[in-house]
Amino acid sequence: MAFDSSTGFRLPNRAIRSPDAAWVRKERWLALTPLQRQKYVPLCPDFLVELRSASDELENIQQKMQEYLENGLQLGWLIDPEMHQVEIYRLDKEVKILYSPAALSGEKILPGFVLELKEILTE
Image (cartoon, rainbow, N blue to C red; front, side, top):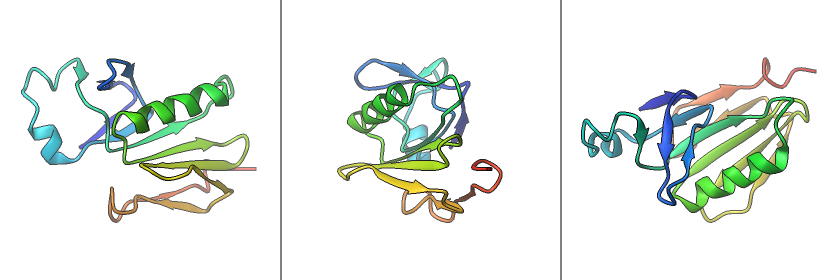
C-alpha cells in the first residue's frame, strides 16, 4: 500500500511522522482495523522516501530517518537534490551515501520498483 505526505504514522515510540512517500506491506495494512486505518496509522512504514527541501536542516531529517529505523523501517531514502546525493537507510546496516545516482531500486522491500532520479537531481 502506498501513501503520500498527507498520511500520518504513529510510530511505536508514539511519535507522529508524515514521510513524503511511504509503503506498507499489504498484509500489515490488512491486519489493521478499519478504525486504525483512519487518522494516524499505528505502525512504521516498511519503506519510505524523504525529499529534502531548501528549508530543511539535513541533520533533522537524518535524525528522523534514524528514528524510523529504530521503529521498524526496512528501507529508506533521503534524497537531497541540492547536494545531488541520496542517503540509503537499511535496517541493521550503515547508511550508504550515493552521489548523483541515475536511479534507485526498491530492493527486496519493494521488488521491481525503480525511481529514476534524472528530474530530481538536476544540475
